[in-house]
Image (cartoon, rainbow, N blue to C red; front, side, top):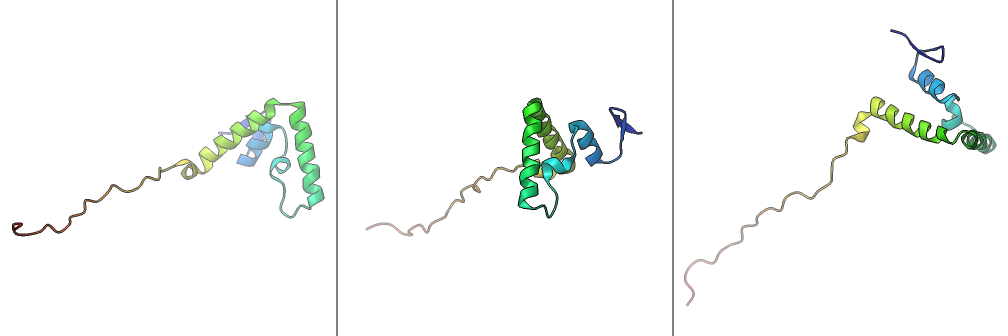
Length: 99
């Protein structure tokens, strides 16, 4: 079965995210080895896009959570850290009768 978003075929998870967001993933995630100037320009562009479409922040957040749920469910399996039950300590009892 083939998946399509807005007439574009989705082949990979990255395709799905890019088509759902309408922006390249690199805009939000960055690229390896980017300089400080490149990062600043990328973050500024992302802010401008979010300012033009405030609902995009909610969409990006929802997609990120859904992707984590699908791709890494173990990350969301939280086990409460509770102390182990107290062990009963058996002390030595005095033997004999008190005088």
